[in-house]
Length: 509
Ligand SMILES: Nc1ncnc2c1ncn2[C@@H]1O[C@H](COP(=O)(O)OP(=O)(O)O)[C@@H](O)[C@H]1O
Ligand SMILES: [Mg+2]
Image (cartoon, rainbow, N blue to C red):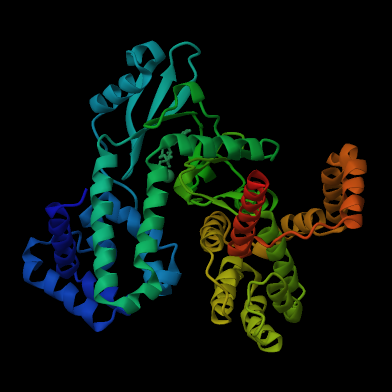
C-alpha cells in the first residue's frame, strides 16, 4: 500500500512527536546524525498543529505513541525489548506503555463470532458476556458452551485491525527508508531490519491460530508441572480471528488484597512464578515472555494459571547449556571459567583477551553477590553481562534479551507477592536440576546414546558402506573439481571432436 496516505502519516507522526515533545528525546536516544535531525524537524515542526496532543500525564515518547494508535503502541512495546537499538534509557521509558484500549461493542463481537463459526452464536454458546478486557489487537469475552455448560474465554481480533496495521507498517517502512537514504551511517542501526522484525512479530499476533498453537505447545510441555496450569485450547472453535480457551477461574496476581483475603500463601506463589519461569526457559527452551501480573492468575486451589500466549521466547538447547554453565560459573565466582565458556561457544571473537574479559565479568558479578539477598536480581546480572559481552564484540541476540527482560518482570511479580523473596535460594534448585540433567554425566550418557542410535540406523547398510569404501580406495577415481567446469567442457567437446573425426575417417576409408 504505497501512496500519498503514507506521506500524510509521515507528517502526522512527525507533527505528533513535535507536539508531545517526544522528537528531541527520540533523536537523542538514537544519537541521530545531522541530516536526520534536520529532516525530522522540517517535517514535524511547521505541522506541529496537525499533531495529536496525547495525554500530558504520560512521558513524551509513550505519550506520542499512545496518541498515534495501536500499531505505534505495539511498535513501542517491541522496541522496549531492543535496548540494542534505542539504548537502555529509552527501552526503560517504553516499558510504561500499557496495551489497553476501549473495547469494541459486544454486538460487533457477536457478529464476528457468528461469522467465524459459520452459524448462529447461540448454537455454540448459551451465554456471551460483555468484553472483559480490550487491547490494541484483540479483546476477550467470557462465554458458556451450549452443550457441556463449560465456561470458556473467547479472544477476538479487532475488526479491521489487519488493514489498519498494514497501513501503519507501510508508513514505518517509508520512514525507515527515508532515514537510511538521508543518513547512510544510520544503517548501523539497521532501521529497515527493525521494521521487518516488528512486522514479523505483529503479523504473528494478527493470527490467533499462532497464539492457540503456542498455548497448546506450552500446555503440553508443562502438563506435569505441579502448581502450574495452562488453559486448554478449544481447537474446533479457534480460527485466525477467534481463539477459544478453557475459562480459568481465579484472582489476578495484581490483586494482592483479594489474594490475602482468600488466604493464599504469597511467599509460595512468588517462588512458584519464578521457578516455573526458570524451569520452562531451561528445561524446555520455551518460555512465556509476557509474564506480568495481568497475565497470571491464582486458582482457588493455589495453582498459578498462565494466560496470554502472544509473546513466547525460544532458546535452543546449545545456548541453554552454554548459559547454564555461565550461570554456574557466576555462582562459583569462577569468572575465568565464565570467560572461557564465551570463547569456547564462539560468542566472543577469538582475538579478544580472556584475562581482560574475565576481569570485566568480575565487575558484573561481585557487586551483585555483595548485595543483600532480598535485592539480588538475576535479571540485572544478565543485563550487566550482556553489556559487557557486547563491549567485547558479542552480537546482540534478541531471544536472550527477551529472556533477560522477562526475568526482570518475573522477579518484579515475585517480589510484589513476597518482598523478602530470595531469588538465588528459590532459583538454585531449578538451575541445579537443569545442570544435573543437561551437562552432568547423565547428559553425556544421553548424548552418546543419541549418537549411537543415529549410527545404528545405518546398521543394516554398514557392510555395503564398508565394501564401497574399500573399493573406492582400491580404484580411486579422480573426479574433476566442479569449479573447473571450463575444463570439463573442453574435455567434452574434445571427446566429441575426436569421436566425430574417427567416424569420418572410418566412413571415408
Ligand atoms: N482463559 C482465560 N480464563 C480467564 N480469563 C481470561 C482467559 N484468557 C484471558 N482472560 C482475561 O482476559 C484478559 C486479557 O486476555 P489476554 O490474553 O491477556 O489479552 P491481551 O493479549 O490483549 O493482553 C486477561 O488479563 C484475563 O483477565
Ligand atoms: Mg494480556
